Amino acid sequence: MVKAYVLIVTNPGATRRVAEALATIPNVHTVHEVMGPYDIVAEITTESLTDIPPILADRIRTLDGIQSTTSLVAFPG
Image (cartoon, rainbow, N blue to C red):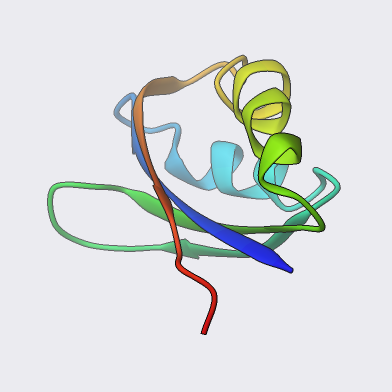
């Protein structure tokens, strides 16, 4: 199992809507609205590292209301 954390900055007023949309995406395991330089932290779990880029590019970064994302892939424990 591979995990990635996606740190998301949203447009003002769009955080709740983006968080709700993220929660419907397959492989998005958890979604948290947070305070600080980012607005949302989402955890993705997949079977393979190669599964992560299409989820980011095609499903997450295309959501309306997202300004930017930073992705962190976790080392297996």
